[in-house]
Image (cartoon, rainbow, N blue to C red):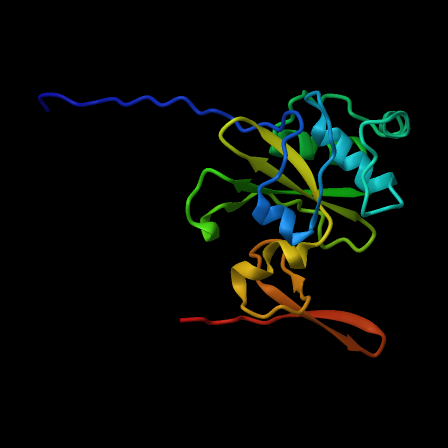
Length: 196
């Protein structure tokens, strides 16, 4: 062997930071709740809002009630701005009864189908006693920001089907599911759509 090249790259971790206005595409979906957080705690504020808010159309905008509710949860060991994987795992450990899924949306990517990514899916999502919280880590050229996904169907439906009706979405693959009642029990059947 005469020579070899070693290439080194630095991994820049994507962490959520302060408030950013969502793109028109996401705002038009009406599927998100965007907390106006002007510090690095948008992860904590989004989770707190999802757990304690009664009004899903209007978010507590960084007010005293939101801050009081944040104190009711255990944030020990979570560094801000929050890493989607480490912070979600730590939150679930500190606060049993909750599962955090984090999806990514990169506004700098040209193709709409490639803008979405899965950052982290909780291993607790199949437990019926667990409250599932879905977050979107929105990224643009300037910053990153966590927002609440309040409607999974509106968020991911356009990626997998042309149909406009509401559908349940699989947390792991964005594919639509159909909920079928069977003797009082809800059973999920995955419906695969093939488009050419």
